[in-house]
Image (cartoon, rainbow, N blue to C red; front, side, top):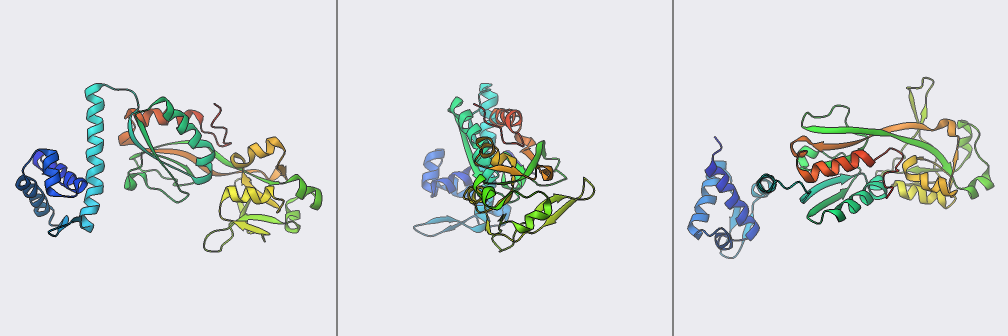
Length: 309
């Protein structure tokens, strides 16, 4: 059974790992070196694992110790912050909050929101990462995730809000269209230069078309004039007159409005992957998480018009 003594042993273990020595942890905790050493020894005996490798000069976490430390440090930090919020009844967002965003959409449309929000709360410490891979908030301890695509079945431990489907359109630069003409139907795309998304393994991502039934999706891999493994990079190639690309509206809307890009074959525009805000339910009541969720749920849209001042 987990006891108060077990929690004490964990806090001593985290202090030793943070301090890098038993003596430094003892000074911080106002305990004797012997008491600190015994706490760690009892914890290792209970776990049946060595948590530290010790020499006369160095102290380092073992592989098991590193895994245990990551979990224990996160749990203690969350307990400390929750206790502080309860004791002070502080409703102002404060403390560290982890947020993971899709690379291009996140940089263009979510990051400006968070930066403006954080100015209003000087005690808030956002930790923002960018990735297009699948992220598991439960395993990785991430408070809030914004995702394009993802699971159709959400864990009961996660809250989620769908805020739209990514709208895909075909577009090109005015210079390219002046030189090569605009396609009039889907088959004409075969005669044009295409700009595609290229994966790191050398594969070209297909373009998406509506099938005979509206709900059907056809995928066609096009011969590419150039392929780029980044959405913003694809857009730059299109702006440089390399050809036609299928890109999300949230990425190109500003360029369409300015006339730097022109939509072609508008009848082929279609809804693509779902876009969601996802969060850990266990943390949604914390002021820092609740306030950010309220902001993102209010502002984020599939067209990317999230930041309006």
